[in-house]
Image: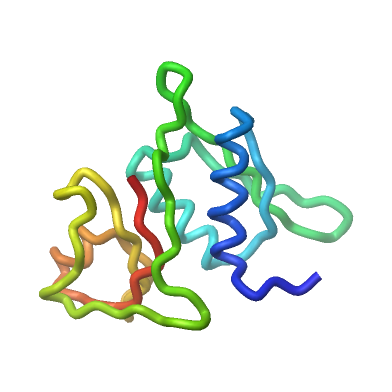
Length: 131
């Protein structure tokens, strides 16, 4: 099956898994997804992720994080979509919920959070926002 928006599919699987209070979810493997998951792990939105190899196919197992029975991720939304790309300059990288949330950007130096992009004075494509 071919996916039009694999990153949006991963975010949908995370949202659906949290609605069902699942401990882990499985998504197909890609380096770009690993970069996004690494940022979510560093910022404390997920517990961990593992690369799972079965039948010569790789997948990612994501351990979702909950606090007092509620999901840590209140909202995860795709901003830049395949049909409409959204870019931001270094000076106008958005702050999500006055700095309480997180925006993930794809820059020329790799995938990074909005705070890291501001610190390095880099702009790029806004992948998603997390709160």
